[in-house]
Length: 285
Length: 339
Image 1: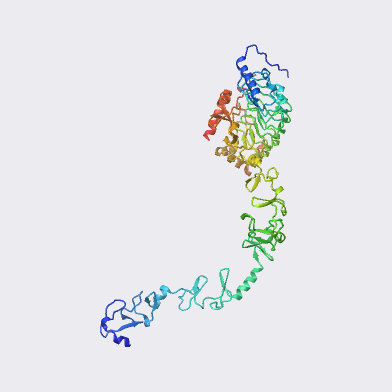
Image 2: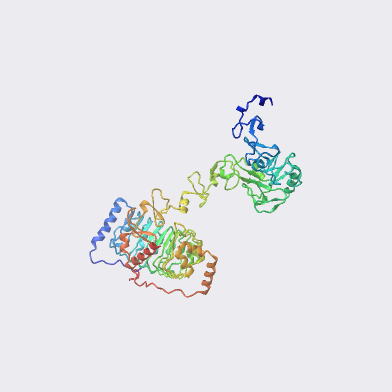
């Protein structure tokens, strides 16, 4: 990567000195959890001594102005939680994927247009939050769906039109949010995610659901199924008015299987994109 | 009547009306009680007794007709009153000549009878019908005819092949043994059927997993016995080896998988929540792990938070969200509140 840390001409001592203080304090008392939230940080290289804190387990950098994540961040080999929410990140280094203990990665509210090749090689990642970026199915790296340790995958507020069928590999997935994407259809393989308890599909362009969804345990009192704001065929829309559990009952019916296979062979044109996403904060250069 | 002669009319009174008698009046004497002839009448119809015949019941006298109407039993066969010997049988009354074998019509009053399927039969007919019945037992499960000996279970007869041995799983026949209670077994384990072979070995406990006899250490749980190494978590199949197990729907789980499958794993650390549990948004947290999902700042049970993809976001983070996202979240919130 050719990015250089931005040279700051204006003395930015106010907030930066606070960041310095946090690091020094953490070193002194050996605090394994570093909070650098809303400190006006625009480059991690500005924070002296950050990459030498090899013992830390959590690094929270939300609400800063970071645009480049240096590959050296992967030196913090004990990190379990890395939170980069609400920054200006457009690219991630693939080195993050080698963090051996990283369980929770939050890169929501950034400006990602793609993910690095090999991104999916996290050994123990459990929660991956990529909400509110500019991602779609074409920019997912080939190994994205080998992360079978994932229990929650947040892809809401992105630009997916299709969800790859390999989603069925994420056997431990309990939470999947595709809220407010451009989904035109979801794959039958979603029905293989036996542990799925939370499925957010609201605000997409869906017309039908694979009958296999009906086999998932999404109607219990600990489950969440969000379907509103789509272009459902009338029988699904009618059941949805009664509640998501009624939709699941209906998906299991023989009537619906017929409707679904007819719909899939007729392949009507997808509903139009109705939401103007150009105003999204993730779009700004 | 010498007695009467000594009595004077002055101290003789009618049993019914209590008045005395006129000299030369005809007096009715019945067992030492005296009546005017007009007073010696049926207690029901107040008429004289035809031919002087009366029936006495609870100190009152009745004519034959009224006594029968009021008190005599009706024969269950001919419907006439039963006077004299009453045969009480099959929850009814009968004339001795009316109570007969329903097969051969022989009188049963003195010969005795046997109740068979709600019918009164003489000994001969009963034996014959029972012998006929032996050849066609009806299976209580499939209602088909049973050729040969039936399997008897909980008081009903069945085809043996509807059952398997509770120990070895072999298909049963009429030689199967029903065991109603066994020492050392929980109550829900009784009333089982066993093949003869297993029945004979029954003194030795059988492992609920491998179905083989247990000769070393026995674990008793879930109403069964287990080899120590066969009593395992239903999820990971690792033996408990004396560690705590959790039961759910007849299965045992280790702590980790019980919580993984049935609840209280912390959303952040994915570990069993040891202390207090914080539950919100269909999830659970260790109290010290309950934090804003955007900035990781700890939230207390009293903190106000916003719901964001079914996760908590603190007020500070929510206010830093892009305005258009906040607008959409507000709209979504209205949708869920309306529901």
